[in-house]
Image (cartoon, rainbow, N blue to C red; front, side, top):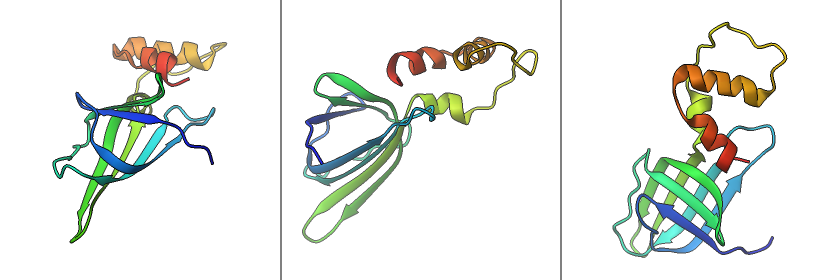
Length: 134
């Protein structure tokens, strides 16, 4: 297993985390990337509510742009730790129900069909998927 310098930007800043383990899962057949972070928390002030924006970078390249889905803090007698789970912005598209104007698609690529759903819902999810969830 290789080591990579990873930067998390949560909300409007980078949290102070120590001994962090970051796992990002991405698959060609999945519309969203998933994030799991376990870390020692040194400041005693971190709490990321579900829905908080999160961006994960490897060097200067974004690996995941999305939201915190769950946060669990653990305060022991000697240490504090956190567990954060999140998913990329594609989760909005995956989790919502959509209505297609005709109810079916013919001779469309998955991207073209998704663009039709996106325009009927008047959202900008597709631009998020295309730019950052490749």
